[in-house]
Amino acid sequence: MKKLLLLLLYVPLIIYSQEKINVEELNFLDDGTGLSYAYFQGELFSCINCELWSKNEKIETSTFLKGKREGFCVKYRLYGYNKCFYKNGKRHGKYIEFDEKSGQIFLEREYENDIIINEKGRYENGSVCYFIVFKGKDAKNGWDEDEPVSLVCWDERGKEIDCSLIFK
Image 1: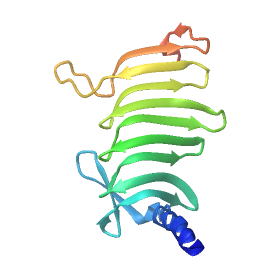
Image 2 (image 1 turned 90 degrees about the vertical axis):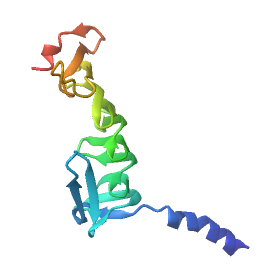
Image 3 (image 1 turned 90 degrees about the horizontal axis):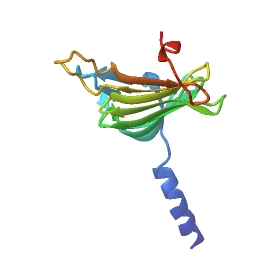
Image 4 (image 1 turned 60 degrees about the vertical axis):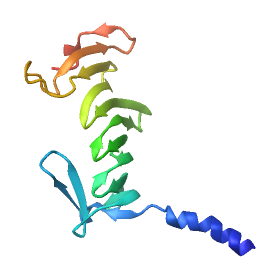
């Protein structure tokens, strides 16, 4: 009975353990529409909650389904890490950059179908900036998807300031 209990405890750990992949073994190809597909040994890459490593450093934890990133991911950087979410291979929802030294979030973005909807950032001079980015491309008005619709900035006390002090 004890052996059966131990077996039942360890089987889920084996099934759901993370797979470690050397990122140099993956081949990322763009389909021409901006969507990137990952290939491993010539096949579309699928891996649930796998770790991507490069030169003995973990650089990302993600899920890939039929070559596309899907769901929650963490990307590790020199300053800290990013948390993001992918839907059908495109960034969707919250994207957060965290600085481990300061213990603060210094960038938050919201994506919809890989297009930035809004962004809130913290800058070195202590000010905080929040701006909304136009969603999509408006051919009639000539707006590009990355052109801000509005831009508002605050200093560390919450007082509104001129954004040209930050963006030059």
